[in-house]
Length: 296
Image (tube, rainbow, N blue to C red; front, side, top):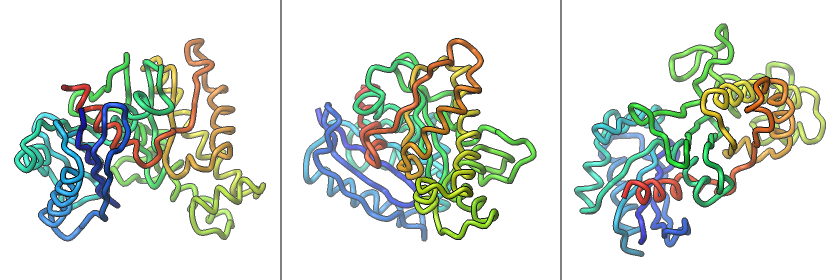
């Protein structure tokens, strides 16, 4: 059984036909238009047409940046201003004639890694994307957890510093303001580091630059606080982390595990495993397909 999967984000929209084993049969991608809602929809429709022309599908799964509204099948991505309460489920169903399932991109990433990536075998999993922003999703008792509205797992907006900086979400002191790639880079630049972006920051940290290492320690301290808090609430057995910043490897994971060990006071949090994601940028597509199959 093949599924058509869509992954909708502020930078790109991707479509793929995915088989039951999580393999991408055909994949296409285009930049996300920002000029109008219909322009963004036309790109989405074109991608759907290209994917289905390459291989048939019997259902559709959609992973979208949030917030999402599962009750009405709509999306309002903060990074796609032209799509506010856009009825994506109805539009895709009308175009394809197929059953459609919608999920947040964080829960789809977590589900993709749970079924076909680094999270195979885990029953209580937190998936995190640490990149330009910080996203997340939960798989609890082996099933994707949507929450009341479909937005459960937004761990990037857990507060780690009540007196901290303003976040794009409108809150203050979210972990995204401390540990996202751009915010770590900006903090390092304020301390005198002269690099340009998070990729350079990671390379500098790997080479032993003191400011770059301090930026990663600061960021991973905030991430560890969020992971420990989420583990205390959800009794996790695994955390899978992907995204551009996670490509830094042990520059990120080594201090993160060290700090988490200090925060893990409760016995059931000690020993919580943190591993790199395996599916890369395709995790949302694979998870969207798994979501459609799970709901079917």
